[in-house]
Length: 257
Ligand SMILES: NC(=O)c1ccc[n+]([C@@H]2O[C@H](COP(=O)([O-])OP(=O)(O)OC[C@H]3O[C@@H](n4cnc5c(N)ncnc54)[C@H](O)[C@@H]3O)[C@@H](O)[C@H]2O)c1
Image (cartoon, rainbow, N blue to C red; front, side, top):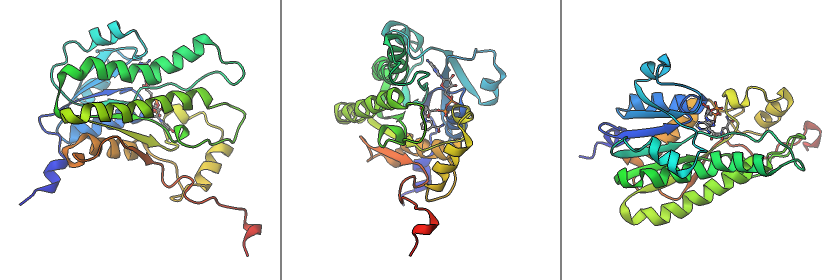
């Protein structure tokens, strides 16, 4: 008889998580470790002596994923066989339209889109049949949430590039039995969003069917599922994990009839 819960497990599998120091990356390391995976964590802000990696039972590689192809390849040269890669690391843009410049464009694109591409390239020789890649996108790449002066344009464009890389590479790697999917979180409670103005947070919650913002574990759970053999027939998809953001457009009470 098929044991469905076994397919959710990651025993004997090696999963690499970038952005592992942050909110979603950290939750994902915990989740996949609890499912039995060996975890290699990557981030730019930590070092191997950080006690966090012992707590998470993860090996650690210090890497700026926005670095050159040569540096990215060198950093992961010795990781051995890989069954899962979660590209979680990303940055928001610190500039607003019309003040984007070459430096800011390159910084955001290199970390958010080029980095995942270079990691997929560097790790491809180590990816076994049934390996799974999950790229963390954002709902901002799929729909424009225009509520404040700050521009999401460059961040959203970098993630839209990653979304299309996800679909293209799913088609290229499918014949080798390698799956590539994306997860598109809605607003999630992490250091990245801690400074968001309360009015914007409230507006998003008010337009979310489940009436709350996401927790890092919510995003980690779907990502871990896509990394597991239970998702073995899913590839090329971008899965929204947003509590039903925009499922309905809620009007003010005075419009009710
Ligand atoms: N929090 C949200 O509301 C939300 C919504 C949609 C999508 N996302 C996406 O989820 C992912 C995780 O975001 P988070 O909210 O956990 O943010 P976070 O800021 O808590 O974590 C991001 C991590 O990436 C690391 N990082 C940044 N630049 C790096 C680089 N050049 N090289 C290596 N590591 C680098 C940071 O050090 C940090 O640990 C990101 O891809 C983000 O775009 C987040």
